Image (cartoon, rainbow, N blue to C red; front, side, top):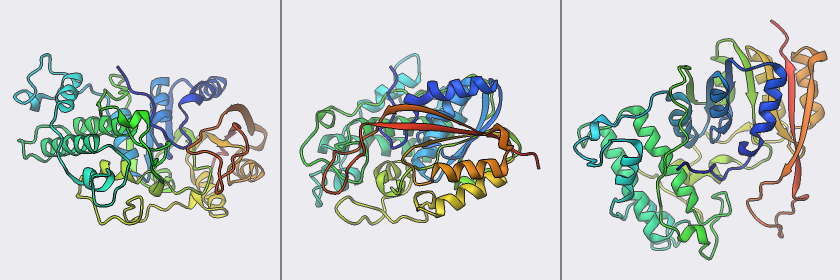
Length: 362
């Protein structure tokens, strides 16, 4: 059984057929690609399945975990170091996850900081699910650090952490982002935490690379690629604040000092110019100008903070103007909350636009 996509602003899972049609129109079924705004890595995985060797990146550690597990890793995990720990045979990913699902809850940092049993009363997770997350996370890190004999390969560690990230998101008492928790328990939050296999794309023979870095840094250190796929933030929401709990779970270090009603950690340079009006337009121009690629395909919606006219101008300036295209498709809006005093959505349907240009040769 595979899990569904993580609830995430801008997740492109439902738009993959639209992206596929654009790639088929370009005749791109092989070659190399770069996805420097990987997020949950849904498009990077799709590009790898589609036949491309992918370089991906993102500022956030939780994204890096998902990239490493489901894009860069191309070998099915064997878990040879757990032979004397996990008794089930054959020793498989499913067997290891079932072992972790049986871990006894432990009252650690998730329990103290993000359940109502802690001193701050935050209702992100039920006390039992929070304690179970603590137990699973600590077991994974202990297996990796060598306290249990260095039992995991690096790839196996990322695969297990990816499973924990997705499992925790399924039982989070939120409306999709972690900027706030719901005051009463939602049905999904009452379900027990259950780890499931992540959507591995292994055995392809394609060499992919994952990076935790700013998009511009990923691109300027990139060798020539066939396709640059861009999916920058659409609005002013800083992902470091909206997904701080997955970021903490993905970290290997103790939780830092947290603050405020939601338990925010220090931002540590994770604020992005791509979420700032004006600065995002300058960032796009720099990225497109420097990208060593043949084709650029950019996902953006009709309500994004970069005006469509600015995207067209930038693409035509640094690409071959006659090749510029804007493909459009309506889709149902992702809502992380309801209309209210501080938010008024413009409707339930939004237009997704794929901007395309063939890059001007240097």
